[in-house]
Image 1 (cartoon, helix red, strand yellow):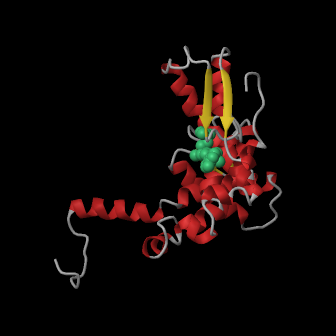
Image 2 (cartoon, rainbow, N blue to C red; image 1 turned 120 degrees about the vertical axis):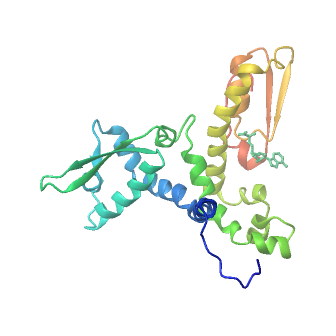
Length: 241
Ligand SMILES: C[S@@+](CC[C@H](N)C(=O)[O-])C[C@H]1O[C@@H](n2cnc3c(N)ncnc32)[C@H](O)[C@@H]1O
């Protein structure tokens, strides 16, 4: 096929490929919509509600005065329901019109809180404006930079930049802490290398969450958490550290 030929979607296999390609174009909508839903307080509201809620009820309980909000919230929540973040039941309103009622779904438990195994801080970090901006310069980083779009945009590496932006630094450290809780917990279930050690040094240990988990399971250890000054100044303090 030449580049001048008009592309067509004709065979069943091309149908599949075309749909797959289409999904790749749209895939960033899901986390961005989820982020807005968290920021609006909708997940927390659904968590606190004993029953499913309609988009109109959600807008009202969040005291959103914009008359068009219910319609937009419904479109937002429909998307999240189709990706199993929410549950959705079709009912009728008082006038007999179809109405969708929403509740938390299987995946939403990972986004309701900001602590423990929550994914919310990580989502906020990945889709923070500071993180996103670099993606627009990936091509430029390949052509003219050192291959690091973050450095090209911010004139600093990620870890130097976090030292200059306390808001982003907090986001970064908190999201690392939440992810580490899960991964380190799993590693601790099967790894036995700490049993005969005396001292453990976590190099680039962030605010010390991994070390905290290790020391809580192996209290005989002495732990040293090594990281940059703007990270350790917010570090955790606990016995053995
Ligand atoms: C991907 S994070 C991992 C954090 C932590 N290990 C965790 O799992 O939560 C990498 C860490 O390395 C730290 N780091 C980067 N450069 C460093 C350096 N030159 N000296 C010490 N720490 C550094 C960063 O501040 C950051 O906390």
